[in-house]
Amino acid sequence: MTGKNQLLDYLQKTPQDQLNAGTIAFLANLEKVKEVSPSIGESIVKELLDQRSHLKLIASENFASLSVQGAMGNLLTDKYAEGYPYNRFYAGCENVDKIEDEAANLAKELFGAEHAYVQPHSGADANVVAFLAILAAKVQKPMLDDMGDDINKLTREQFNKIRQAYGNQRLMALDLYSGGHLTHGYRLNVSAIMFDVHSYHVEKDTMLLDLDKLHKQAKEVKPLILLAGYSAYSRHINFAKMREIADDVGAVLMVDMAHFAGLVAGGTFKGDYNPVPFAHVVTTTTHKTLRGPRGGLILCKNEFKEFMEKGCPQFLGGPLPHVMAAKAIAFREALSDDFKTYTNNIIKNAQALAAAFMEKGAKVVTGGTDNHLLLVDVAATYGLTGRQGESALRAGGVTLNRNSLPFDTNGPWYTSGLRMGTPAITTLGMGTTEMLEIADIVHNILKNTKPTTTASGAKSRAKFETTPAVATESKERVKALLAKFPLYPEIEV
Ligand code: DSN
Image 1: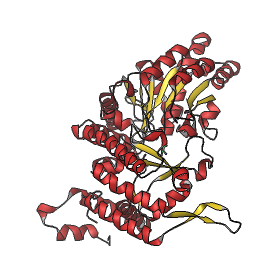
Image 2: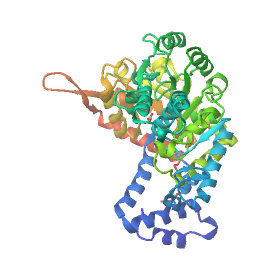
Image 3: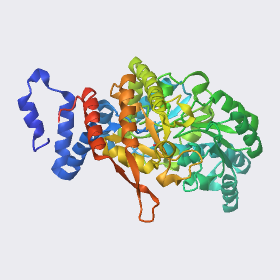
Image 4: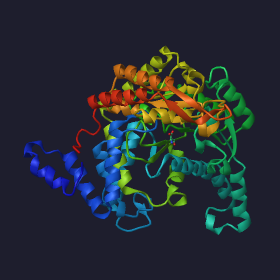
C-alpha cells in the first residue's frame, strides 16, 4: 500500500524498461495530495481498492481512461473563461478557446451534430441550459422582436411579460416512476418550477411506452417541449416517430440521451434509435456509457446555437477547462473502432444478463433489454425491497442501485427494483460467459436474503439477513472473477 515516497520506491525498484507511465502519474499525483491531506490521499486509494474488489453494476457509472483522468487533473482548473470560444469575459483564454473548440468539434464529428456545447458541468445542468435556450428561442425572441431587441432596455412591465410567458409553458416528459429522470419535471426539481409539467407513462400491462397514446396526449397538452429519454427504461425509443409527434403538435423535440450516449456514439443505436438526426436538442452526460469525465454536453440544430452558447453566464458558472479537455480526450477515444466493439458488447452483455436472470425465474421488467440496463423486480421475485437487495449485494461484493419500478408501491426510498447495467464490467473486458457467473452470484445472494421481522410480526423494509456463508462465498467468487479482469492494470498499488 501507499507509504511516503511510494513513487521513489517504485522508481528505484522497477527496471527502466518496465516503468509504467500510469503508475508514475497516479503515484506522483497521490504524493502531492498527501502532502496536504493524507486522509484525502488515503480515500483516493481506498476508492480504487473498493472499485477493484466490487463488481460495478451501476448502470450510470463506468471507468474513464487514465488519459481522461490526466486531462482533468491539472492547472487548467485555474482559468476563468466565461463566455464561449473567442467570445470571453476574461483575458488570456487562448488555450481554453482551443480546448473548447476541439472538444466541440470532436463532439460534432462523433455524433454528426450541427452544433455542440461542451460547457455543462453535469447532465442536470445541460438540461436547464437546454430548457432556457428553447424558451429564449421560442418564447423570448418573438416577444423581443415586438418590444425591441435589447432586453436591458425593456421596462419592468415588458420584462415581467416575458417572465410570465416563460412560466406558462408546458413540458411533456417521461414520469420518474416510468423511468424518467428527476430533471424531466419531478416536483422536487427546478424543471417542475420552470414548466407546467405533463408526464407520460409506460403502460401498466407491458411496462412499455405506447407512442400512439403518447401522440394523443401530446395533441391534448400541446407542449412547448416534448422530452424523450430515461434513467431506467430498458427498451428502444423510436425517435423518428417522436419527431413526427413533436412536429404534429408544434413542439420542440428534446432528447436526454445521458444513459445511452455511448451507444449512439459507437453506432450501436442507429437509424430511428439515434436521436441526433431527429431531435432539435439533445442533452447528455459524458461519464456513463460514453466513458468520459463527469460532465454534460448539448448537441443542437443550428437554429438553437446562439441561445445555447449563452448557457454561461446565463445559468452556468465558469466553464471547467480541465473537464472540457477531458471531454475532448473521451470523444477522441469514442471515435475509435474499439469503442464501437465496446458498445456492441455492452448490449450483448446486458441481454445475456437479463436472459440469465429470467432463466432463474427472476422477473425482469419488460422481459429483457435493448440497451445497457435491466430492471429486476426484487419484491416480486425475492420478497425484498430494492433497499434490502442493494445492501445485501453490497455486503456480498456487488455494487448496484435500487430503483423504483413503474407503479411501485414501495416508494422511491425503499423501492421494489434493482437496476443493473453493463457499461463498467464491459470496460473491464467481461463477456457473456461472465454474465452467467454474475447472474448466479446475484441470484444466490438475493435468494438467501430475508427481510427481518419486527416484534409485531411485520416485515422490515430496510433490515435483512443474508445467510453468512453465502455472503462470504459470494465475495470469494467476485474476487476470483475480478482477478481475471483487473481494473486500471496500469496502476500498480
Ligand atoms: N444519477 C443518474 C443515474 O443514475 O441514472 C442520472 O442522473
